[in-house]
Length: 178
Length: 268
Image 1: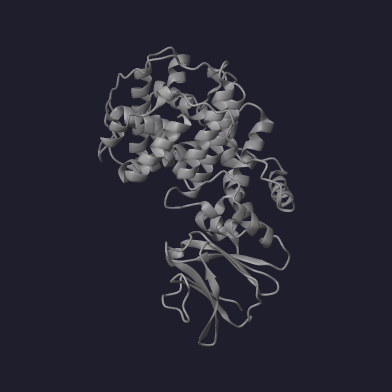
Image 2 (image 1 turned 90 degrees about the vertical axis):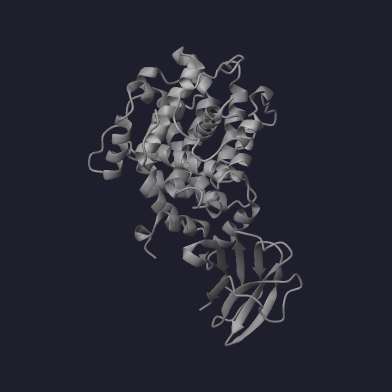
């Protein structure tokens, strides 16, 4: 069977049957994106590569437990990689990444889906983008975001809630309730 | 306390910043409240979309080979646990002040998830990074366990998966996913070189019933035995021209199949 033409979910099924070519194809499809996510979260390049490889090893080990009713393959992979990166961040030092290094996503104009997401991100103000950076890419709790920004916890919570719901409404349909 | 606070907890759950105890409480809540579960699933999808909107990075030339090498080296050493399995810190401590109010969990309804102002301030000191790195590590690892469990990911040693990996790694063994209705994945069948089978189903049989395996030669099903778990190890060599099937039967099994087979696999 040619793995290039089958769906992500079918690749996971083949991985659960221990077919390496399915893992290779999933790696080909998603590793460059997970590498970009890990790079944004972690400073050390060796750690970045190790984190991405760990994500695929975990996907290989637990492919038989994947439930596509609970998450899409891409969400499953991103979540694994994100949590592994957070583990590394918290296991080392949460101060490793200075605020000015939290750059915005780069443009990728030839990809419709990415343009769509960029459009959703553009609806956020700079303050909201920074809060999402802190909470998602740096793994900060609401309390820690309040601590590093010097703003009240209640304000952080409400702003983050509004920002994430704006994103959800943009990407999943409906109007943001502000 | 209001539903904004609960929504904040769900968002922290998605972001991975809750304590293990809070994660468990959210898991219980999500299992009982499909609206909240749908909201959380949407938020996981949204954050995945955001993460994947970045410019893809260039992989090192040896990334694929390195991954395969790691997979193969682990499977050649069956007794060795996966090197990247996430483990809880043995001395993990949970802050008892960070519990979720069960009354708030109980008041969440459909339509409650919307943006709005909230001035809730949690009393108490924010834990500092320098003094609590070990506890934070424990929290992070436990949080990964809970969230991954919700998404269908179990970061723990699964002996059945390990056994299946070892069997599939043997030369001459063919392993394939077992597909059910609408291409759902029911499990995996490993056909060994000697035509014996090792079958792993995703679910155990319903309570009070068993899986019964059959070798169907022509029109005649011949019982291969009954299994109460999700692993069916059929050590006898089957006829290459026969069909393998599994039905759900009463505890002692049946002389002939009494239900529609959940698995039918031609062995040719």
